[in-house]
Image (tube, rainbow, N blue to C red; front, top):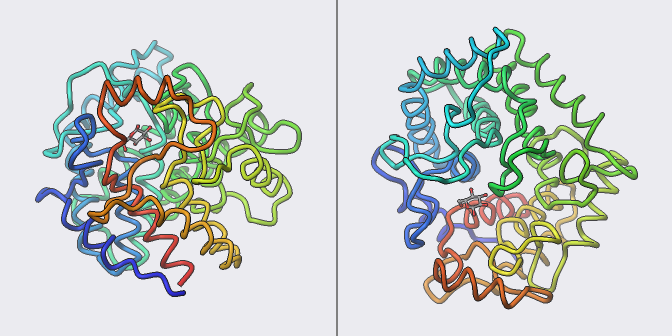
Length: 350
Ligand code: BGC
């Protein structure tokens, strides 16, 4: 079977704001914002699908959103260099309003992974042509910010665990700094290697990567260490044991959990993670397994073609599912990031 991604690409393009942002979900009350994390993957998917202009518009949007905070970021970096305490409420946000302004709220906003993922996505974009005008300065600013703060504990990719060193966050920073080294030169690549050495030194237990330093569980976001970040190869023994642990501990009949103790919507199977795993298997040459996983994802497509963030599955806690559904309504659908991962996996599997 060949994978057609045309409708998913169309849906992503249709939900790009005029200024370049991708809304996380057009219909979910809590997600009318542009997250750097979601956007970095969406831009990459569209770039791979041949929609370079869309990726360019996104990178321009990020550059403007970050650029208007330049003075604050430079002050943060100076405070850090001088050994002064830095209040986390001053850090760059994880998500922005679609016009690039900040959203004032109590969201757990200090998350560094999205900035690393953005630099990685931008460097991938720049392989196909010159950097969009004005974007270079923002890339330097973000790379300086990450170089200064990558070892600061912060919320993870799931916006949880404020005081921990999360492996996929550190890996995103390492990948972003490596990418910045290639794009901008300077000492960024060396700083990226320091971040990666930190992961190898503190985030490996029992021969596999773990969710966070001092947390021996696995998390599905650990797949990103190999795909797409290429910090390790599929044949790396530590990664191979991680993948085996993920498939053993987190696989359910409807797809992949984020991590075992997840309670958000009862802890269901995440479409974007199932597709992300398919993307990895396809890149590693295991097309058949990738297709099986993509077939599981297809079962969750709504009548309108939308893919949700997550679906209930075996072991989902009904109390928490009910709690979140009463609070925010059913799981976000369409979630643009889910569609992006399906595009990436589908293109890779062919
Ligand atoms: C997820 C984040 C994501 C955001 C928007 C949150 O629930 O934990 O990873 O960036 O939704 O999609």
